[in-house]
Amino acid sequence: MNRREPKNPSCPSEPSCIEPASVGNGFVPVANAEQRTYWNEHAPEAWVTHQEAMDEQLRAHGALALEALELRAGEHVLDLGCGCGDTTLALAAEIGPSGRVMGVDLSAPMLTRARERVAEGSLTYVELEEADAQTHSFPEGAFDAAYSRFGVMFFEDPVAAFRNVARALKPSGRLSFVCWQPASRNPWVTVPLEAVFPFVPPPSMLDPNLPGPFSLADPARVSKVLADAGFDDVKVEPAAVQMDFGPIEQTTEFLMTLGPTARALREAQPSEQTLDAIRIALRDAVTAFATGDRVTLGSSVWVVTAKRGP
Image 1 (cartoon, rainbow, N blue to C red):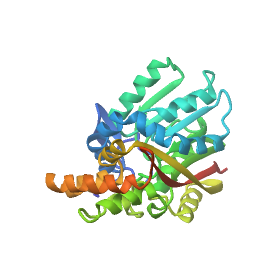
Image 2 (cartoon, helix red, strand yellow):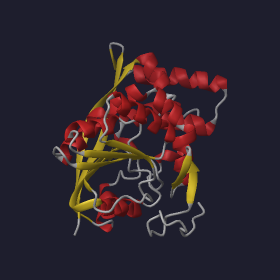
Image 3 (cartoon, one colour):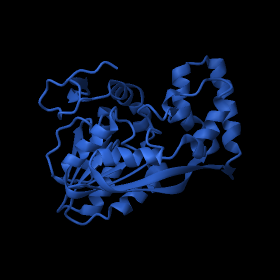
Image 4 (tube, helix red, strand yellow):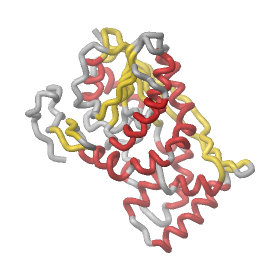
């Protein structure tokens, strides 16, 4: 990726910050144009369409990080990668109208859905911002805590991003997020991918060295990134969650639309005939994990907590 020194004063003075790029209806400083494109052009329609199903599948994971944050009424909280707003609503319920929640995300379409949900609840103390958390000029020392449910693995420069988050926190401000353990420990990833590998190659998003869902799968790397970004008292705790994907046919179509399997299909662009064969193989694979007609697949995550250093 071509990267340039920032000329725009809204970028923090990090070497990885780049010029603003057009996102949605405005101009947002971003450090990773590929992620910007993916979350605004390739992924959002499916995520918005399947928002309720995704929230149901991921809510238990997010609750682990939410509980670890130990929020109190009236606090100001930053929601990193807020997506369609489920986590933002959960944070708002914890801190109440005397507090403030700011949700940020790169995806304009997903934020549109989030704004609809916030408006439905008349949550005037919730603010949503189209922004890259790595480069956005957050007010310094404005937040008591920062939180994320699978929203912090996509940074171009994780140290710069978390340093920017630390800058937004008050002294000793808390950070809590949940991220995936390696793909090999996540049957929700391996089961469908093993079914489709005879037809298509692995998706690029599995590379732990690139921005993507598994970039923070190594707990040693997580600890180093946060320490280098200015966080203390870093803890990385393992957790396992069973994910209910619903009926077999629904699960099959869902996995072909969202997640690593869907990314593999998008990158490979198989023929319709091959897609039909993939659908059959995928259906057979998930059926082995069905109780009755409902498919349950395991997942493994890290629950990460830290505090802003002095």
